[in-house]
Image 1 (cartoon, helix red, strand yellow):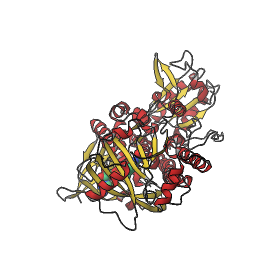
Image 2 (cartoon, rainbow, N blue to C red; image 1 turned 60 degrees about the vertical axis):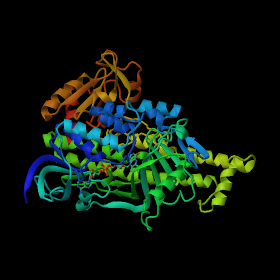
Image 3 (tube, rainbow, N blue to C red; image 1 turned 30 degrees about the vertical axis):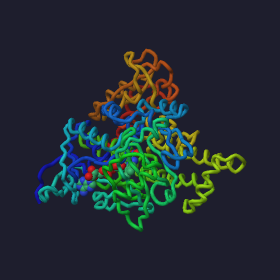
Image 4 (spheres, rainbow, N blue to C red; image 1 turned 90 degrees about the horizontal axis):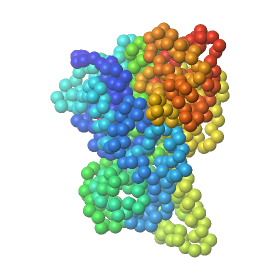
Length: 585
Ligand code: FDA
């Protein structure tokens, strides 16, 4: 077997997980190669909702502005509409993704970054181009076949799909970001839980100017209650904006047992006319493909030198828009760890924390996305229907919605409640932000986990409890408004302290020398390099002025001390011990 070349990290796949892994690794200076099966990046829009946590990761590596410029803005993402068709009767709307006035404030308090809508056809090229600019080598038409690990590294066999030639690539680590049918995960024999395939859906992408039906209620998603819509699929029929308001993706379910339907031109036109509610529009279909609604997550996501990320380890429907977001966040969690191990500043033990931290997230998001499909059933229940098989009854119940009298009043109230409940899908801000990691890369401070005072799925609740994400606050550096998140990250550790925390700064210099690490020092408070003019940071930090937070490169709190010790030596000892524990040294 020929080993054609060596690389520090070989990434299999160029989807959100693979392209972002490559970007993060390259930013941290890691020699990285991506192989990907096809001759192109994604040609289908698929993932689009891009949440703040993803944007924070991209902000950290300087790509946030590029994506913002290319994406559909946050303001146009609200107004998720439930209707019988675009031209037909509207059942109600739910302000979504933090666009409601009250919710928006919570989103803005939580993060310096916006929500936005960017299909994979927009996001992947941005991530991959930035990765390539930073030195990543990409080999298209190259298929992963198998791998073998030994004490020194991994040998991966690949096939050049143009010539049929197979060859080996030698790497220190391998990242399997090869999607829902991951061969890397299968070869690792990762254990999965969950029922597996739970339904079928088809996605049809088409161009059509539907502006007249939607410009008064701009949204990303329009959900259609039509006969048969609740069977399989994602709960109802969907028209999803790809490009406002001229490009769309239609989603409709099919029974897995019966197999995908013949996606003929006539069938597609019929579906589109049914969901738009009129045939008075022209359309050009650009792609049509069936896909499986999955309920499957790996309970272990890495073995030895091989790490899986993205749909390879969490397979679920698009509800809640968590797929590519979680994939990118997996890679953000993994990349700094690989970089530090490769640099020799961490021991391989640090890598065990990837599994400990991200496997629970895989489970959480798969359960959440599937629960959201079930929640859509509440809309039928609100109309006092079991299903839509009796079209006459469906019409009669819908007619009650506008009828005077107690029956109408009851149906209206039930519908309002059912639609409002969908905030667990369209405004689950807590699901996106409330991760509190527990692993060897977090040093507990002996305090109990702070309770969630609000619904933990709906509301982001910041804390500096070790394992949680560093809270965002607007502070000021040299008269420039800056997020606390901007003060750390970039592949390095940082400490955050305040007035009276000088011992920590001295300790950081000493420990940085001892461990051969860069440790950023941030001091926030009146007269400090970072000012806290609104006092927001003082409210959020949960430590005294002289206390310290040790922040990991992925902006999670690794350790904290509520106040400075009296002796400088003690501070250096504490910081050294905390970082050694995190780095496995
Ligand atoms: P992905 O499948 O994107 O990429 C896998 C990569 O591996 C590809 O580059 C492929 O070519 C490559 N590959 C596979 N086998 C290989 C082999 N043997 N050798 C080499 N390369 C190989 N998510 C979200 O966050 N927000 C949203 O709004 C939506 N919406 C949405 C709508 C619809 C209709 C669908 C079907 C899905 C979504 N998603 C979503 C989910 C999202 O698309 C999905 O979670 C991500 O694409 C997963 O990214 P990955 O990089 O893990 O896999």
